[in-house]
Length: 352
Image 1: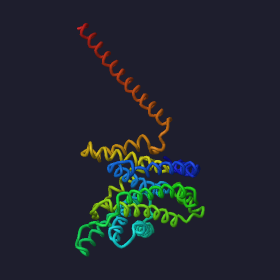
Image 2: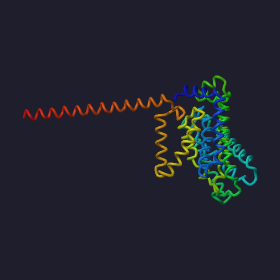
Image 3: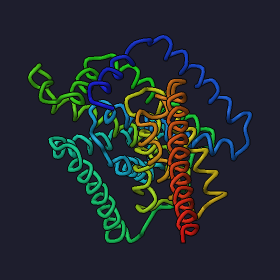
Image 4: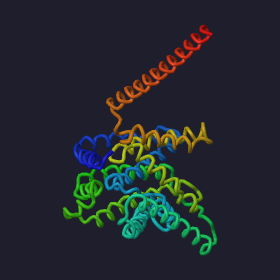
């Protein structure tokens, strides 16, 4: 998808606020009923879906508009998790989640001020490198200062409290995306993604806009990390700063559609269900299958699941039929050459 079409798609998503609000309200109603109607496994699956809805939607809010590929989601998630682990017995639950979001946002402002002048591969590599730097710094602090390699969480909230907290964060992430897309900040980020130099000539403070958008993404990741940390009874840097969390977030956003509002939400649900099925049925081929899924998505559906339309399906059908006709024509030509060769051999044999 070109930068112009991305910007146009982003601007089109600014319309129909009432429709988007009704869809969000309906989906929230379904999610609210899960703890009362579903089993523990269903609640666990729904919790994973909601976690990636919040992470992918907030990631798309900034990266989908500006086209900056951030791999720092795991860093902000881990920061929020460790803030919750350290303050679980000192702070109330809402304050703890808010504190995780705030600390992650502060780190994002510092990180963004240092690296957001870069683009493309350089920005992606540096954000990943900073994630690893933070993980190793926390590991060193744990081993040398506290003398441990992780933390045991004892005073954890109930299951439903954690579920409804993550649900609130997921709804807040979607609602924030809906609102930001309709503000000057959203337009500025879309302008940066289309042509950053042109946005600067039009008077946009691109540095400030990028730092603010990056901090919003980090705040949601930190809040989700704080809420999800109590899901485990023991956390360590390798668990909460796991780069795979960031990679899965990017993968979900790409499969869903980085320039759309609802694409990451749909992809988060599909991806979570698929990932759980693959882990149970094909644990050895889990990563291979995810890699193939990403390749197929990039080749055949570059706009993500949100771009899937009847015209897309018809185009796929026509492409498959065209490929099949080419294969049949090539096979017929090979058969014709073989037949002519056989006839020529027969003629030479008779002449001899």
